[in-house]
View 1: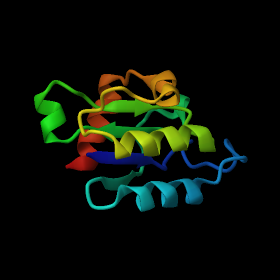
View 2: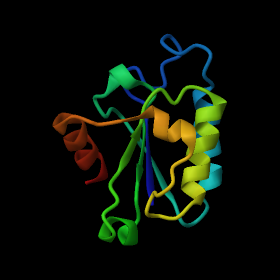
View 3: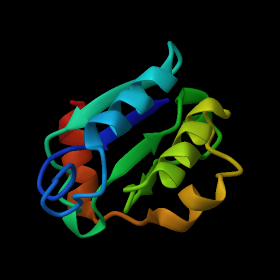
View 4: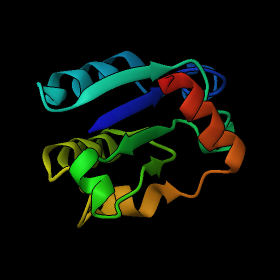
Amino acid sequence: MIVVVCRGGDCGSRRKHPGTDHVAQLREIRNAAGTKVAVTVSRCLDACEHSNVIVIIPDADGRSAGASAVWVGEANDAEVTDDILETMAGPGGLTGLPALVDIHTFHPTRQNRRELDEELG
């Protein structure tokens, strides 16, 4: 599983999201990742209208089973972050998403997906 945390544009902006501790959120995600989840920071996924954006990409087995990336928008509080951490701890196929991850999921544009592909190389 790969977790991409956007920190460009409006994501990670103290001006736009002054009540969010962006550094602590990223630290929590990295600490929860352990060895089975890769965490990367994006300079911008071009989905600023959904800031803060975090993308959870299933592992190879999950993708083989038909799972696709989950784009989580408005990840600006501890409760959403907790549900992202729960998702990271679950199976790599991203089934049975926690409530707040499910509620905050959005469908990215082709441009958003292209930005992600460029970030991941």
